[in-house]
Length: 201
Image 1: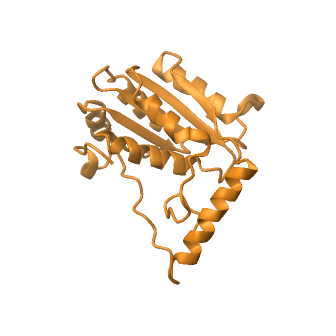
Image 2 (image 1 turned 30 degrees about the horizontal axis):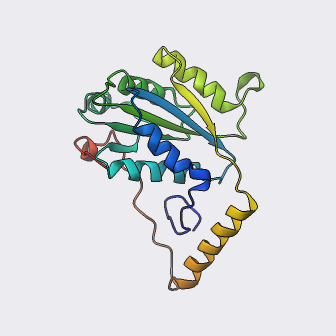
């Protein structure tokens, strides 16, 4: 029931992170990359999904970039004449996803910007003892040929936020009828045939 896909527990925009990411999406840069890192269960995936939903309402093409070798689909996504938000959830070890993301980023323009969000667990250590998020940043920058990626650490909830989240979850569970939790549809895969012409989430 705590799964990001189920969305049973109310979303809490802790420290305005969602608001800041929406502002980042609508900034003037043609292309920019964020790496969200934090402990398992801290809310990285939920934050990424909500960001896709928010910019999707503004007409962006936003969703999940799956691990794929469908070059035609990736090319269609790269050449889409609209703003694009590409969400890569926990894919720091999939080189083909980085290649696809770089292909989309290469087609960014001021009128058709590209934002790419990766999520990485902070407890994962890369070679040489460096954090996985910073190792991923180096790999992304090498693929894109410039330093576009920034690492953003998702902070632990403070006591006030924990109480607020607990109260919201308690009300949700108290009010819902008994029975199995109905899972929400998964994020659309941007390289699937049914999403190639979508203009929003």
